[in-house]
Amino acid sequence: MKEKLSAILESARAELEASSDIKSLEDLRVRYLSKKGELTAILKMMGGLSAEERPAMGQLANSVRAEIEQKLSEKTEQLKKELAAQKLKAEKLDVTLPGKDIPVGRAHPLNAVLDEVKEIFLGMGFDVVDGPEVETDHYCFEALNMPKSHPARDTQDTFYINDNVVLRTQTSSVQIRTMEQRKPPIRIISPGRVYRSDAVDATHSPLFHQIEGLVIDKGITLSDLYGTLDLLMKKLYGKDTQIRLRPHHFPYTEPSAEVDLMCFNCGGKGCPMCKNEGYVELLGAGMVHPKVLEGCGIDPEVYSGFAFGIGLERITMGRYGINDMRLLYENDMRFLGQF
Ligand code: DAH
Image 1: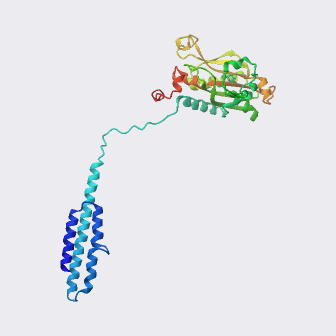
Image 2: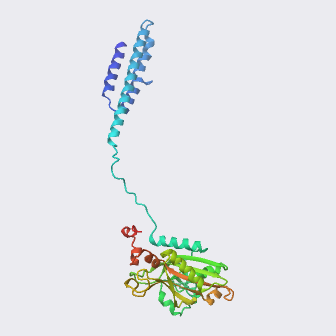
């Protein structure tokens, strides 16, 4: 028995010495020390010893066990340390290296300007309302005093889904939808996409954006229209900004005007930037036509109002000095990153 114990100790020492990972140490512990281990097997044989032999053998067996236990834990500690050292070495971090650039997104220039415009109108007590892009002929044209034969339709030659359904050519359709749903006083803007079958160039696109505005109340006059747009443009382009109203024709307003912005570059004298006009055309506007009001059940003898339609692309391009509309749609990050 004594020999067996020393043999166990010898082989345990050798194997412990040779093992180089935590897993094999655990295997050794099971093999030597567990209930089914070799040492336990020997201890079980103690019962067959004489009373004189037993204490000495017991002591020996215990000391063998203690040594194996100690060596196991020493070796485990050592291996853990080595592993940690290796890990530290492998995962060395050089804090002087430049950091990773995490690109942060921002609003597209069209959205940035739209957000500003919304803010300005919200400040004047307007609501922002939405309308459908797929629209009926009625809302897009008929109810705006543009019957089927009206020549004004030609300028908006458009995408028809069938005789009666179109991709809206103007956000003015939302004027009608709003007047049908709300009672005056009405103060809304409605931004959104519009569609026309235009060839793409620096100032045209088959899809672009408008911001419609509509105010209906008692005693609304052209000076309210002027004041509202003047404030909008001063907020967008700076306090020295000047606008002018130029007579025009729209079937759904009377009188109608186009609103021009005095050229920043030459102050109205005329230069290449404004094509020698001194002013740049910005938007269409006017006093809502009595026929349109009547069609929506609003009495033109009691109420009056103004409406306008702004091209979002146009005011964005003016705002940032962008000279080609296509740049706004190409999503080239080198371009968009500048704003
Ligand atoms: N709908 C016009 C267009 O697309 C713009 C416009 C003009 C809107 C006059 C209006 C308005 O509300 O009163 O060119």
